[in-house]
Image (cartoon, rainbow, N blue to C red; front, side, top):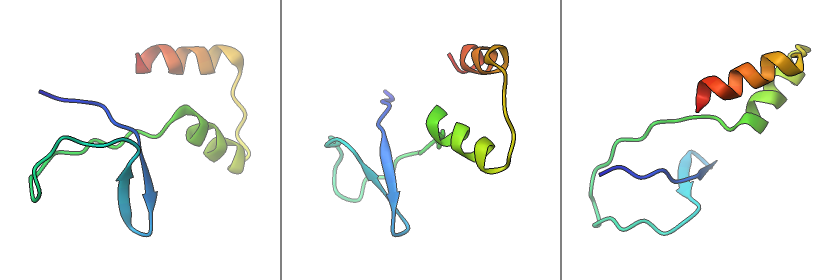
Length: 63
């Protein structure tokens, strides 16, 4: 069974924002997805602007 948990990357370690029901030493598979806010910041930092239609299309594809 899989779950989705938000986490913060700090000092080289992913820190979950909620308690995980895992055994000590248990291995898990992690899939990294950047949030829309981080993606927008990266675009802005690179001087790229997106239209409302492009943003809506992007969000629809992520659902």
